Image (cartoon, rainbow, N blue to C red; front, side):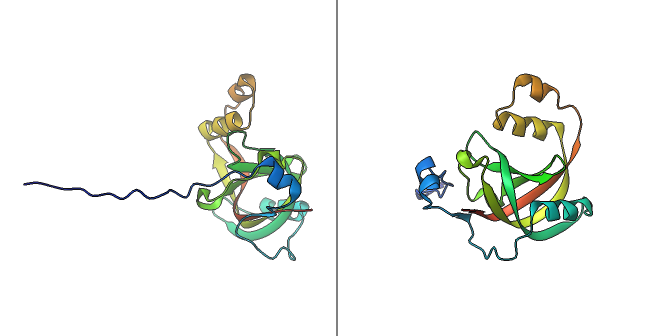
Length: 159
């Protein structure tokens, strides 16, 4: 019995990372899905929402925040300041897009789902490496922690 396997070469649609020039000249305001940002809440209001959520809750949300950190490997996640020393770890739905690493210090609006998670030590260390943390900082991560998380289907860079 002879089996024949045929396959087609198909270009893979991998997320692209915008260039620094694209970020500066404003040609890429949105990453992912475009959305109406008129009802976006502040990061402080979002912190209040997170504080009332349990691990099983999700909340469709749209909020603005200051980017405090971006994945140094390829822009596949970012952290947004919420206030009171808290941050939201933002990942991108279906790994469909990345954001520029130069986004740190800029104000953005994210659209998607907020949730609370317990992040494993392994995952914390992975994200710390991606964020460019030192080996000492990575080694100091020794317990599972409650984290405020967000799955964004769209990001708008505020001008």
